[in-house]
Image (cartoon, rainbow, N blue to C red; front, side, top):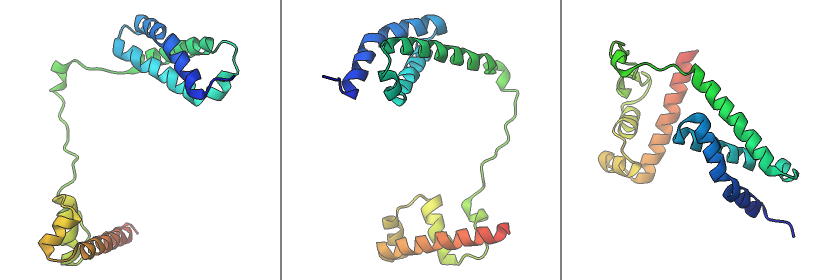
Length: 161
């Protein structure tokens, strides 16, 4: 009787995961990195399960893939640039956050459209909360918000042209 997909995967995982962790930890000198690499191998196994199930020794595929993943990790780490924390304070970072939404809304919006968009996006109010503030029903609030979004998008697109 053939094993189910889950049983087959679980059996490989239970049998080989601990040994793979030892190999990866010895090569990478980091438990966290080893966990990431071994996890990546088992994710690849799930993705290529149909192909790997045809192998007589799927554990060979696991360890070969582990070796390749360790090599890939080490290669990526070689090119990762790091700076000591004491030198990082010398760098000035430009504030690239956008200004208030009220300044970036297009000019063609009505006052009511501006108000509902600001309440929803800047103040992060729900439609229920907005409906209480503008004294409208919740469904009317949702409709007005939808129309205000559409109008805003239309005006932004017109500005781009």
